[in-house]
Length: 242
Image (cartoon, rainbow, N blue to C red; front, side, top):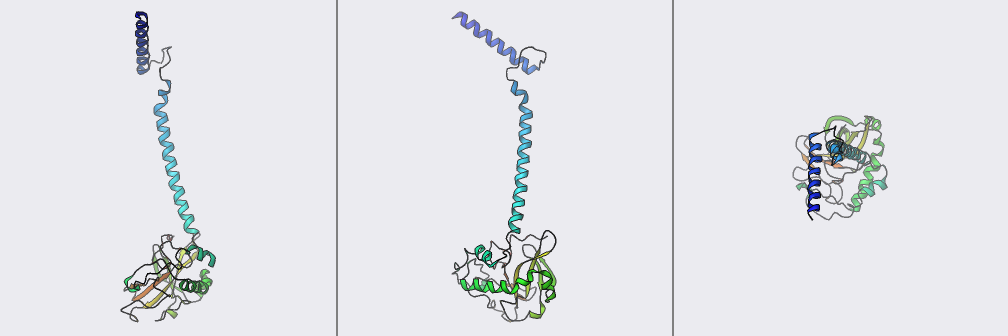
């Protein structure tokens, strides 16, 4: 028993000596440090922090690129793409709240869907920006975040709502600087219907904005670029001005 205690005490002294040698940084000591991996602890932690920071930055950049790709891919080239984009909203709108209250309903009837297809067919040629300019649409210098660049055809800016003749075309710029059609906008003078929004698309899903600055009732229809907030919502979170 005494022998065992003696050996334990010797081992304890040896361990203490080794640990002291490590702390004192005695590089000339032939004795190997008790925990050699501790020499790498600080550099490893720093390396881990750098790598973690790099991964986080890379993840943020990837998310930003994904957002751009998502926005660019939101253009609905075909009627099938348009239907698929808004399929959860078609036939789901039953709220009859007055449009004059500015109620924004995502859902719309199938009849409204067919009317929106009419608007698409009538404005498809204006996806070619030059054709819009040639047909009388002019820049009115209205550039709004989450909307785009507005071009008005004054010749049809009258008191009538006509699905196939939107008074305003809304464009955004592509990465190469060219214009891309994203929405149409209808405009009716407030003086025509001062107390209530004008009749528009069938049902009550469409939303008219009473814009006193322009003296107009205005209504967007996002028929060329998908709008997750609704086809008739004023703004579109996927539209980023360039």
